[in-house]
Length: 134
Image (cartoon, rainbow, N blue to C red; front, side):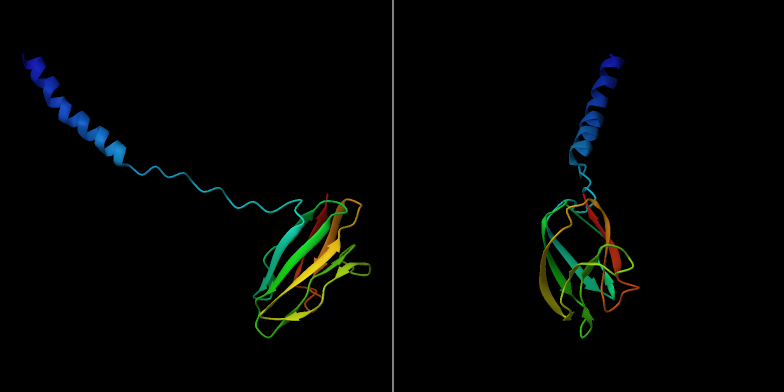
């Protein structure tokens, strides 16, 4: 008889554990942002005298559209793409725009895969990145 009482005493405890487990928050972690690779429509923002990305990846020969948002009020920026960091051979040179403003650049990526270079021509030593063609 004592054994039956012990069993009945456990029922409320088990019910409480099940209730608590059912009320627990089941959150699924958000996936980390993944950089866009191989896409042809890209958005780049300049803010605080820096680009929001240091790497852009596109497909070889792709028609590329870049929406460039300059959030630096009263400061001119652009995006220019070169075959190397020496910036002697231009792939595409976007017009300068004084912020706050948005401009769209369109051009064809090189047909030869490789790592090329982009920068702001107004701030060529601090605003730079890799233009990866796959």
